[in-house]
Amino acid sequence: MKKSSKIAGIAMATLMTVSNSPVIAEETTGCAACSETSSNNGETTSVAGDRSLARQKLIDALKSMKNQPEQIEFHSAMCYKMAFPPATIDYTCPACGENTVHQYNSMAGAMVRRISTVRRALPNLPVKITLDETALCSKCSKTERAELVFTTECGKCGTSFSWKTSEGNDLDKLGWLFLEYPVKSIDDGPGRGPLKNPDKVRAMVEFVSGCTFCPKCIEELQLNYEK
Amino acid sequence: MKRLYPDVTVPKTAVLELTSACNHRCVFCSTPWDADSPDTGKFSCNNELSTGEWKKCIDFMIGKGVHGFAFTGGEPFLRQDLFELIDYVKGKTACHPEFGADGRVCGHKEKPLELTIITNGRLVTSEHAARLKNKVDAVVVSLPGLKTYSELTGGGNAAEALRTITLLAQQKVPVVVSICVTSRNLPELFENISAGFLAGADQLLLNRFLPGGRGTIHQELCLSAEQVKKMLRIADEVCTTANRYGTVGTELPLCLCNEKYNMLTVGTQCAGGVEFFAVAPDGSVRPCNHSPVNLGNYQDLEIAIASEYWQIFKTREYLPTMCNSCQHMLKCDGGCREAAHIAGGALNSPDPVFN
Image (cartoon, rainbow over all chains, first blue to last red; front, side, top):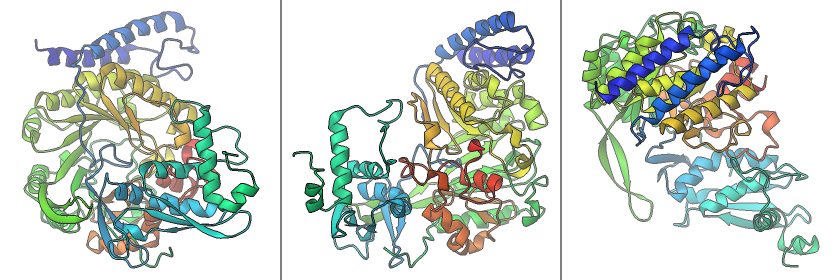
C-alpha cells in the first residue's frame, strides 16, 4: 500500500471515529483543542479519554506526512487580502483620473495598497493633516521617487509644515499616529504583548510629535527627547 | 487631495458563479441570488448565461485586465460545459505589464490566466480529477464538518468530499480543503482539518460563518469573538503539526487575531471590489460574493464600479464608528463589511462577531 493511500485511509478512519463519538458534535463548552472538556451529560471522563487517544493518533498521522509544505498560489479565491498577491496594482489619480500601473511589491505598490486607509484615517486625527499623493500618478508626478507628502497644521500654533513618507518603515510608522489617547499601553505586534523597548517608545514619541507639532512648538512643549 | 475622479480600475480576479444549481442546501450558504435568500428577487438566476455567453463574459473580463478566474456556483460540476469553459480559460492569456528599473512600465508580456475551481466535491469522479491535472491552479473542496457535514450541507456525507480530495491529490492537482466554521462544527474542527490534510489536501482555507443568502436566517451559527480566537488556535495547531499552510478567508477584525500564528495567514482587510469581484449566474456583477446588491450586467462593468456602492469598497469608507479611534485602523477594516451590512443594515455596521 502506498503511503499516500495509507494516510488517506486514516482520514476516513478519523471520519468514522468522529461519527461514532457522542461528544464531538454535541459539546458546547470546553476546549476543542485538548481533552479538557466538560460535557453536560456525565460521560466526560471516559469519552474524553477515548478522544484524547484518537487525537494522539491523529497528531502522529499528521506528523508522518511528507515534511515539505506546498504553498499554493491561488489568489482567485475570495474575501481576504490575498496571501499570494498579484504582480501589479492599479492606481487611479483622484485629481486627474489617470490610471498608473505599479508593481505590487514595490514601494509605490505598498503605498497604493495603503492609500485608501490612510485617506480615511486622517480626518479622525485631532490635528489637521492633508495628503498629497501626486507622486503615485504617472501624469501628475514631479518626482521619480514614490513618496506621500503630508501637510500638518501644527496642533499648538497652527503653522503649516510638511513631512514625507518614502520608505516601507515610514508606512508602518503612520499607524503610530492613531494610538488611543491618552496612551495607556502600546501593543508591540502579534503575539508580543505590550511595548517595553525604550528605544521604540522614543522613536514613537519623536515620530508622532514630528507629525503633529512644528519644530518650534516641539521645543516649547519639551517633546524633544534630546533635551 | 480632493477626489474628482472615481477609481474605476477593474479588480484582477473575477469570481464567476457559473450556475445557481446545487446538490447541497448548506445552511451557511451566502449566495444572495439563491431561491432561499431574502435577496433572491434582485436577481434573475433562472436566466443563467449559456456556454457561449460565459465565453463572451470571459473574453470581456480579459479585455478589462482580469488576470485570474474562480469558477464556483452553486456547484460548478453541475454544468455540463464546465470542462469546455476550463479549456477556454486555459487557452487564453492575460496581458501583464513589465517594469523597468525605475518602476515604470516598459513593456508587456502574455501570461497564462489563473484558474481556481470551488466545489463541494461530491460530483468529482476519477476521470474529472485526471482531466483537471495541469489545468487549474487549485481546486478548493468544501468540507464543512465530519459528523456535522450532512446537517450543515443538507445532503451527502464527508466521506465523498474526502474521497475527492484524495482523487485530486493522487493526480497531483493542487487541492485546498475549505471549511466554513460555524458554532455547530467548531467542536470537531481539529478532526475536520486533520481529515482534510490526511486525505491529501495541500492547504487549508478557513472561513467563518457570515450571515447572507440562506444563512441570513441562521445567525445562530455565527461565532462569538472567543470562538473565533479558538478557531484560529485550533487551525494553527493542526497546520503546524501537519506542516501545512492555512489561510483564513473572510477578513477578521485585527483585535481578534493579534496573536502570532506559525502556519496560518489571517486577513484583516477586505479585498471585495478592490482585488476581486463576483459575476452571478445571470451575468450581473457585485463587488463581493457576499454582496446582496445587483449592480447591473457585466457589460456595464465600469458603470457598476463607478457606482456609489462599489466606490465605498474602493475608498474603504466603511469603517464602523466603534473603530474610529482604533490604533489598528490602517491595517484593519473592522471585519467583513458585507456581513456587517446584512446583519446591521449598513456597510459601516459592526461585524456580526461583535453582536
